[in-house]
Amino acid sequence: QASGVQGSASVFQTFFGFIMSKALFVQMAAALQADGANLVKAGGAIFQFVISDTDTKFCLDLKNGNGSASFEENPAADVTITIADADMVAMAEGKLDGMQAFMGGKLKIKGNMMLAQKLQSILEAAKN
Image 1 (tube, rainbow, N blue to C red):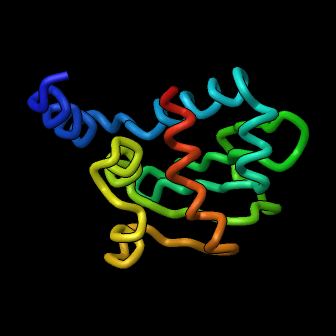
Image 2 (image 1 turned 60 degrees about the horizontal axis):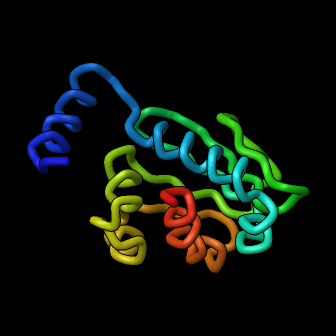
């Protein structure tokens, strides 16, 4: 895709309230359907995502069975990652480094911080 298209997507999102990270979460759910057992083996935890500027909540259970994904809040989450929509997408696209986002205050982590380090590999798996 041309970079102009991506730029206009964020403008589009701002004006029309689209949640770009939702597509990413749908991709994660699809990856789970395709290869749940291996993702559970790699993840070993329940990841809660909170998109701060859209109040979207997504739970990725990579702890139980073949895993599950749902747009809800799970109080049993091992780690909660709070991030803005555009930053979540930038991180998934490799344009924003997770550690830099955390150090810069764009990414907040509650719970087991070591699990958050697995996030990049989970995002990579969702793309494939």
